[in-house]
Image (cartoon, rainbow, N blue to C red; front, side, top):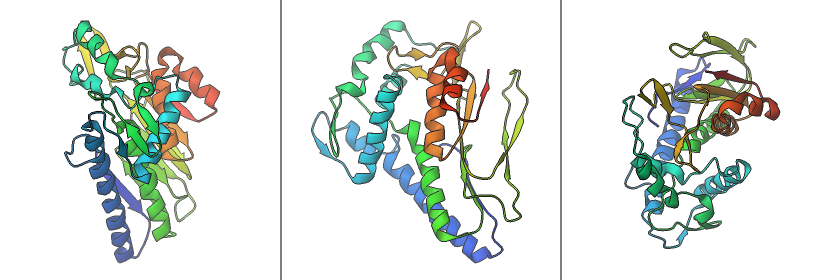
Length: 276
């Protein structure tokens, strides 16, 4: 998942904690192997190489695509798992290499969930198009890991995959977990420390993936309808929600609102933090 992953367990029984860690680790690697766009043997690669031929998908993959379809509808097309083809033009490596507008434009016909034939569990992905579940995969993995942890112990657990995290409840002494939100370099906001006794946190932002050209910062958050970075988006959005999948979705949708991110989050009635 291209990030450090950890599980914190407050348990005096080291053997039980080690067994739980092994269970969670296997699940994280399973999800990585199944849904990574970088693995040749993943389900995602099988879909992307289908060349327009119908595929019957397994129940887990079908549920994720159902979720992606709902997100596309709720966002008015701003959230689109077919937008990964834009990485053929954009390389967010901190350089100043902004792609030519014509190159971006020629990719737009390959983007759009409405072009996909989807009647669960049957998928028809037009030739040349791709899906990318990176926008939901890590958060889904956090929720699955916590589900397994809860089944394996009654002791307090925190799952943290690259800063997206969820907890099973308060710590053994009744105190909440203390979680830090790191400030961004040159941002006006200072570091924040939150207390978390239930639910999950997820963060979306461009701290590590961006381009910088002539003083203009280009965020990796792309609008699939235009192929270009969302203007005036926050540098980072963190959302607290009941589970990590929901928190991650709301954080991403907020970034896609650009200048309206804070208003969008207020309308959702969730606790959130935006850094600009």
